[in-house]
Length: 178
Image (tube, rainbow, N blue to C red):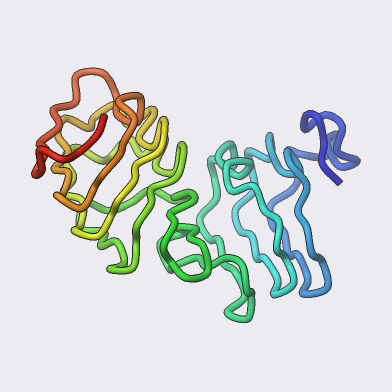
């Protein structure tokens, strides 16, 4: 079920003791706020059957070092860097682990979702690959070191709120709609 807040989850009283989560293949949904507040969670596995998952709920799991999704999952994909995408890798949903400066986005990527890269404090400069067409609100929220983003000509729409204050945007196309 969805929980209005983490305190409603049956395990909320044990949140500080939860270190590993394994959601088996038979589970189809991970409720909203199910793991919000599990600050000591170190690893998570999402089974093949899960088709509902709020990637943002995992953002407060600050000790998370491993996040895997079954290769047989038909809705989501997570790469070895803990970045969650739609199964077809067209939508970046959330980067859960700290990204390295040399992280390479998949060529299939078309959308950077709302708050998808929020909290990536190590990012200082970024060149987005050609093929991205949309950057949603607060995509880079909390990226306090991010100073410049090169936006390719393929981007047709983005929200100014996608980027932190003071970030220089290098637009590669006059057709981009802000």
